[in-house]
Image (cartoon, rainbow over all chains, first blue to last red):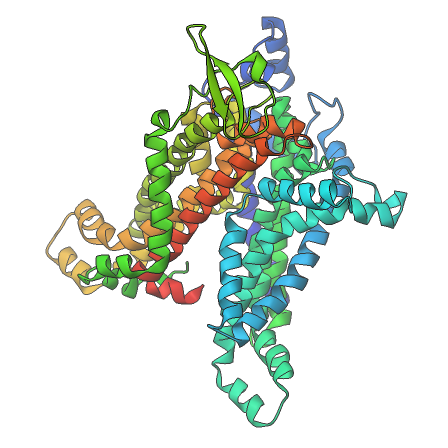
Length: 313
Length: 306
């Protein structure tokens, strides 16, 4: 098992290197003078020159890449143009809301989607199954921000149950923290529920056709145990895999959701940085999100060893 | 979407003469196709659907609720009466006209982004699947590209390039390329083992001819399915970019732009957000349903997996 984990860890290195190269090239391969692009339309030649020297854009591209990599290895993402603090500090400051939003979203999504998927698989082809599949296409199609405004309009404006926007830190009390987070998390979880429910259903349907299910029923196990202990347990690997893949979806959703609900997290930071043409921050956020995605999927792969005793690497 | 999933059977299906008939019988293809056809008709007929130029505004017609009569000032300076079916925005522009014209942008972005991603993905996938020396490097590159969330690539590219219809389409298409490449590569890897490819090789057919004449035609069905899904997510992503204020310039009527302007006054005038949102949701839904129908009919092996 440990050799497998070590090998899998090593295999992420080339991916991360490519990500670093791509993020580096993003600015350098843009047509035109990168310094002028970053400075914006109103900049004077002096300001452009200052940016060029400040970012080392006057040096040969290979040298620039060397500097960039050595900074990355020291966890130095540079200083934000707009916020005037180190990008790593900026990311650390904005991490809590995003982490809270993502965690609650995943919890809601798994708690809702897995039972629904199992139920649909159990009554495969029935009305509930078809309704869930219909919902799942709808869930994939309805834009996050449209859903956000529908929920705000109904739950916050018409019913007045939850605050419209904003964020409270966990340190300010759990009640307000949760009240501000529920609506954004539900909004974000819909597409995730659609995805997980689909995969749960498909893999449980497949598992239900196996011989061990017939054996389990034949020996008189209650149907609930057949479904959970046998069918669902054998579907764990695809379900966990899709949760990992779905993190990419989640990151995209976070950018939009935080913007609609005015949550000061990393997603909001991304949009603010783009609008302010704050390139060091844009690069830093992209790198950070990509790292999270790669690490999550690394953990997913490693979890196979624990979820499926047949897998022996 | 795996290697084995789309291989031989998917390729076989296309050769049955009944593919078209099966498509027409499929409920999802009918529904998605019909809604999409209506949307295309709306996009083409936009000027004759009781709309005015979507950039026109009138200071006297600001913030009207849906259905109200108002006035609109034409480019020549004439003031004409106009019914604001979907209300007006805070500039006094007609939401209905903007939403109708927005259909053009969304459909064009969906179609062109999908075609672009498919074109690049096919070339890359064919090369990776058929030319050994390209495979390793290219696929590592694609793995890296896939590790960056699509929306972030698109946002960063649009921010760096000047936002225009072309740059937005390219920026949306780029993150989709790795998925197409992977699909084509896996198809190629299984098709190249087919006897007819072996026969072509032994007859001395040049590599490019094998790639484009023998292998490419057999990837068409899965690519149509994939392309449909890409179109759906491209339409969604364009709306997100515009909504966040990093997409097409605000004077271009797109559903995302209308919603971005409307969100400021959402509490008082929710229709500025809801009408374009409804069009967007229906469009994406129609394209996705069409994609599911195409997948079920053209690509049965893949359909079984999902």
